[in-house]
Length: 102
Image 1: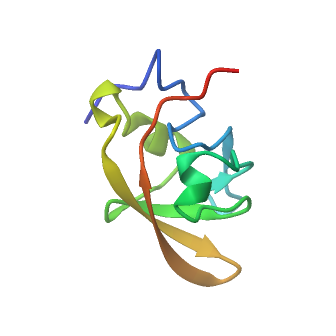
Image 2 (image 1 turned 45 degrees about the vertical axis):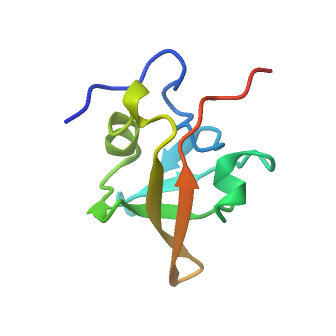
């Protein structure tokens, strides 16, 4: 398993244009708390309130497990996300990017 992300891909950011996420009430997946409207997450179709349940086909049991999947070698790679949105399952494809400078 890759080591936790540090530096250019800060914990809680996920490198997807997403700001901090939180574990869902059911304990399965990671809920998107906000999305950078100009970031790769939003461009890939990720919306606030989405629950990320799969990452490249592997189940996401918690937000910590999702963050641990990232490392510096992930930047620039495309990933597929399985998302639960309002009771429906949807797919989103995003490219991992570094956090924009503020």
